Length: 333
Image (tube, rainbow, N blue to C red):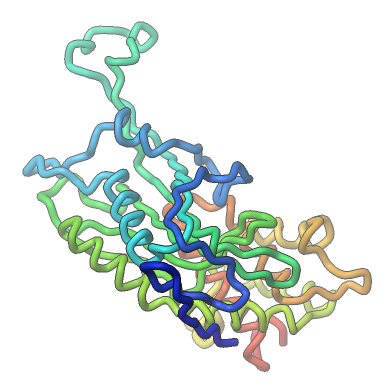
């Protein structure tokens, strides 16, 4: 499926129109709709103002140079989205954090923890993930409304903060969120697993490059293809069994087999949801289409830690797409 834009003339502006996609000619920042989180695991929801006002900024220990803060990453990404999608609605960021690092101010050095006052406590979060939705760009697939979104991940545990300032690493992605379940749909083409940058301006450049290179119509077509192929209950049972076996294959035995990143507990969750998930479970005859299988994967992935979440999300799409496109797939044959 190819989405061909047309130009509609409005007073003082040109509006790009995409067939089947809701449009708005004005920029509008709207409140994030309260839904289930896009990632669960051990994360909690925070506001951008919390990061801006209540968190210290980690530094590189040997030269005391500051890192690019979580809030700066989010703000730069938001600027890029507003630049590219200037005529669309943009929601406020949905931010999830984990692994709180606590501290205290020097004047509270002799106090016991229970006696600390709020202003004497410091904190930052080692890991942070966020998404920013563009709700005026949508697509309906198999009865599920998908909303375009851009997001990112920052994990300080992947930086060497004990050294001098060096390149900093970020993960950035663009894709869709399934608004029925809030699962993220991320393809490899819309994902950079490691943006290495030395400045905010360089980070902005690379985020813009990723957004501009994303092929929305191709991604939608690949997801649509998943709805058109199904597997039987017997094939699904074999798939689950082979997924369990894959984890114990040697490196040489894995050569030529599609990569699989999800863990054992997530495989068990997929098996359970094949029977119990209200939205993506099997049909009455036991068959299940690959779009539903994919959503079982992305639902299970919500239990991943932040630093591995998007890698597994992109891998889930590649893995399911391989089931759809390759006739000789080890997991089904």
